[in-house]
Image 1 (spheres, one colour):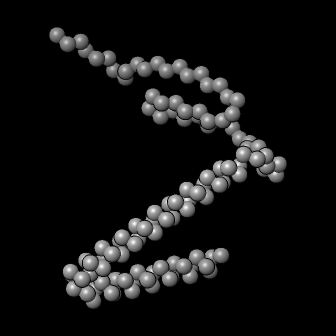
Image 2 (cartoon, rainbow, N blue to C red):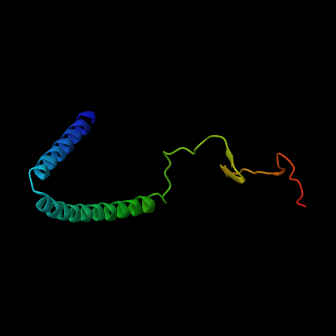
Image 3 (cartoon, rainbow, N blue to C red):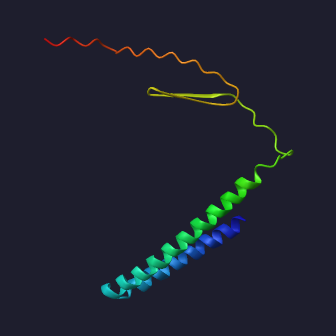
Amino acid sequence: MRARAWLVLLAVSAVLVAVGIFFASQDLGTADQYASVASFFLALVGVAVAIVARFRSRQGAAGSTEAQPDRPEPKGGTVNLAIGNTYLQQGSNNVMNVEHNATPARKKRPRK
């Protein structure tokens, strides 16, 4: 699997170098026209990938409603976070009691 990833990386690098050489050999107007057409097709590929990913995520969500006996229940403690004045607790069957006393570090002098 690792060799395959290196081969894909090498192929993508070779394509990018070839495209760079191609654009460098063209004049500015022609290169601009080629880049516009290429960006259009790249956008179409991006939309197609997004649609496929959306359908695959829906299939995965539909299949996860069935009971999976081989999968153990997650174990672990509760995660409590306090960032600024916002509190967040994650975990199951937990109770969180928060007492927040916001006293300023120094007293403000009253205006005259």
